[in-house]
Image (cartoon, rainbow, N blue to C red):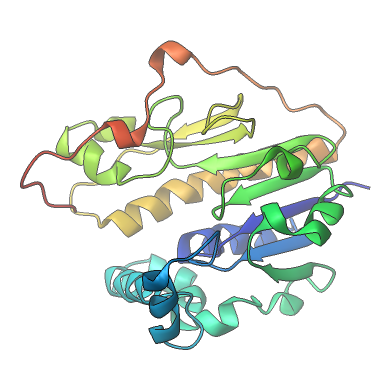
Length: 261
């Protein structure tokens, strides 16, 4: 019997992807929710930020992010799709998954790398899907039988890591290079072999949040293709990345005075 798990911090975008998968009939055996803003050791600023955050948010920064997302989604086709995740952060943690996937085991954890019970559960699944959260260590991503796969919002090997890729692509007029990649996780930062990719051109007057949502909507198709193959007993075809084209998003800077869309 094919089984898969998901680890995520359930941002509005990651929440949209997860719900879209469930609506297609792909219900994870285990959902590991990593609480945003709580990974690793925290200094006094982080502790104060967590204490001052409204109930249901991991930090003041997370609260401000959710408020920005709600504002950017107002009046767009994405508002309804993400309304649950942006409007009810406390309820978001549990996801009300019983309504759509009663067989899913939901665990809210600090960090999957240090959670022995989560690692034990991952040894029972075929595939782990990564949607945000802490960078995984080998003790986690090597557990599933077939492997761990990450949905990365660029066309790898370009723009590995995290950063304002939409703003950078607009600033340098490279909007046609926007896209998303589903790759297997290895010991590097977004260096693992690629399963599939999809190009998604940027729209001129679209907010960064809406651009990410359109990009990750294409990623849902990639996840569906992977799960369909593996559930039928097929090995997913993987293509090693071309290291000569590799670069990291943190190596690229926005031009001075550039405004994000």
